[in-house]
Image 1 (cartoon, rainbow, N blue to C red):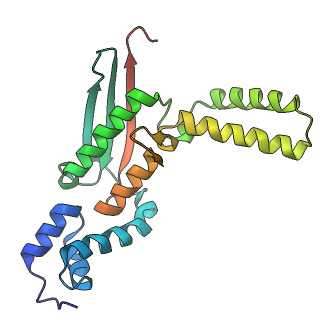
Image 2 (cartoon, rainbow, N blue to C red):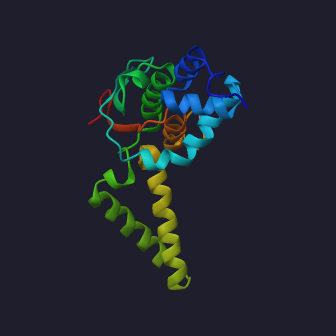
Image 3 (cartoon, rainbow, N blue to C red):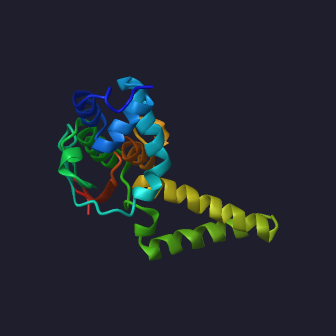
Length: 202
């Protein structure tokens, strides 16, 4: 394993440029990886993944606003994605995330960023519909309740942006994309808001 002296400032700077992680985190990762840059990236990612959820509450006041216009000019999206520092906001990884989110919104038509952002009256209306549907089925009440919750969960996965399957990779949700970049950068990242416009729409 490399000693502190063996890890040069140039290596630390290169790792920081690649991952967006803090200087001390980069230095420690390089020491742990014996000075191997690729291994150090993996070390940071593994450590970051475990901490990703705890970063969600931190202040994220930097970031980007991205505009996406679908090729036929009939659909447009504006989305704001926040991070903690201008440094991360300028990285290609962050820019790519914002572009991907904008494209996804154009295609998938989410109604809100998070489940808790969905209008309460809309959620209640959906619940009542599922309850009425379940009431028609000849099953025990406990099973009916599970059916309702299952259908409501599916509705959330279709309506809330962070719960939706990513249009370019349906093995991951949009929320998974955000968490992966949080793990890589070591910063809180959040999709703050979006607006989707469709020609002739309300």
